[in-house]
Image (cartoon, rainbow over all chains, first blue to last red; front, side, top):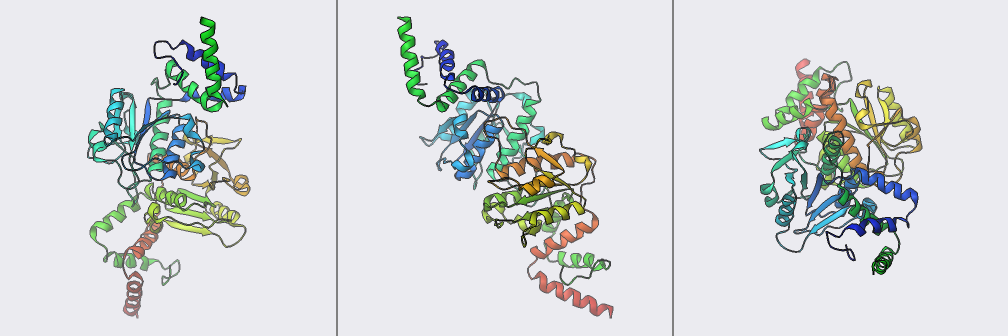
Length: 238
Length: 238
């Protein structure tokens, strides 16, 4: 949010968005608005220590497709790397939150999510698990945790979780690839969400901030344009 | 089916299965029967020219998890290779049908499936597409076609298809990774199938043949034991 006034003085964001929007084609802008209409923060995704770039990338692509705006990336041991051929540029349309600077990344991420009003939902078998179709969406916003390819979720994540969600399986193999697991869970829950009465869409404030981020990454020279806009605005007021 | 009498003389299959089952632990046998109970041929999967081993492998693993017994593998330009770390041995629990010996692999595969009573369903956008939740499961067995990573389904597959199925998407990216797409479609349709009144389970004849295949790959020295069994059986009858 460089160059933008602190909270409480948000009026210029609307103006800045309107200004930057002039540098995008009508078609593209319409597309952005359609996608924005379907974005949600009611469901959010946490990936813990995923290490294969094609898996990490597939999860981002799935989030974009199903309108999940935020992805929380916890890097305890493995650095999150993307595979451009799989991710297809979706990272720029998502809000990525990275936790990788200390040894309590999982704890920090989950604490912050809980403080923001999320239930912590581990997608992993457990004695008190609930199956995907029976998961109670109405009980409030949910942060869905996906573990890494080898070990699944960490002990900390499993113990901190409020709920445990599983995909019913009927074969010999008893687990899914992480990208597959995320796709199934996100498809099912976002589909149920869209046909529910839950107010899942972004708040007006979130909408404008997400739109600003999209415009910033869509418009060439956005930074220079933004400086120009702010300078002119300051001039006009003095 | 080496060593087994031709159709019409199937009695020994039951006996052979019972014989081989003696070399498997009770627990494992119970597991096999539970999995067998949930297997289906009402839905079947066709993968056309998938070339990344981790995608091919993830599709097989998904089929096993959701009880889809048959996978039809069409290799026009790309050879189907598996990644053992993703596939986790599921190939041995599935019936794989490979079409790779001539230039009309897609045509051969689809003709054979149609002759076996399957509707040909391309999972790909089309002017007459139907969305996943509205797909009519009751209209008969369905072969679900998934195309490759770069080009999707071939023209031949698209033109031959009776129906076109799509997963509704709400983001900027308008396609899924093949393993993700297969997972979402197979999860949703198999889940709807299990809660429907459709007789989706294997026929008694299919059950015993699938079980025989599983025992053959589970029992050490299965081939030698089988020869022994058949020799003793022949002796007893003469």
